[in-house]
Amino acid sequence: MSDVIVPITQKKDWMSDQEVRWCPGCGDYGILQAVQFLMPELGVAPENTVFISGIGCSSRFPYYMNTYGMHSIHGRAPAIATGVAVARPDLDVWVVTGDGDALSIGGNHLIHALRRNVNLTILLFNNRIYGLTKGQYSPTSEEGKVTKSTPMGSIDHPFNPLAVALGAEASFVARTHDLDRKHMMSVFKAAHDHKGASFVEIYQNCNVFNDAAFDEVTGKHHRAERMIDLVHGQPIRFGAEGQHGVVMGTDGQLRIVDVAEVGEDALLVHDAHRADPGLAFALARLSHDDHSPTPFGIFRSIDRPDYGGQVAAQVMQAGEKKGPGNLASLLRSNGTWTVG
Image (cartoon, rainbow, N blue to C red; front, side):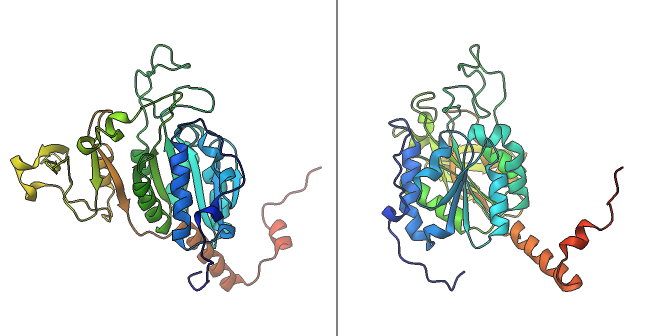
């Protein structure tokens, strides 16, 4: 599709005529704005773009994009998107999902889309709560979380979405948050440009049922000391004056240190293109609570054959060996039987 001339678009060309119906102050508005501002920069056309969602507040997203889309069923967006991406490799296919939709009933579909490396851009809105159904705990809610469904506090150990994605060996894994449009757009663009399964976790605030869930990390007064900006090829350091850094101990564990004490040369240099996901996994688990320094940016970005391309290659290979297929012969081949 590189030779196809795509008309220049503007943000308004990507906005549908539907009224945006999220709660006032919801972080979803910021994410929607970031995506709509980004789309004209990608060199793609609305008629060649598809947004597929499951169930949840985030899953209203396709209604607000002037593209093709499908509001599917709970947890099944990655499976449906896989079919679209494989059947129509010429399309840009996005999946919009939430922590409940993707990591509970949809967990199985998510991990297999990632391990297969289907050419999808998956945006997971993580607010650590079920918002659409009015405030039950989700797979990412912290232990002890008191909600309508856990009145004595959750006893479940939460998922780390990035660790799940990296465990499935997703070829692109990143994290951003809903308070920084520039950062979101940068991460979303990198995810879109990646060939294969791209997974982006977005810290998203639900101001009605789980307000300020990430405020100790992404809040204006905490960002400098708590947000770690990952840049490929650069030493990992952070803080208002860059005074903190990350090192790897002899035991393989990552630790937060003062740069003045250990020196710049001791700092871990971020390698997003490292084939083994171990380092990215360690970075994903660096923060141990809501008050700890937390990495943002691209954790992993590697080249790996995408699923749709491999399927197409097999179909072509089969055609070269056996010639055009015959559906009638297939239906009457081995394995048939007569009943009665």
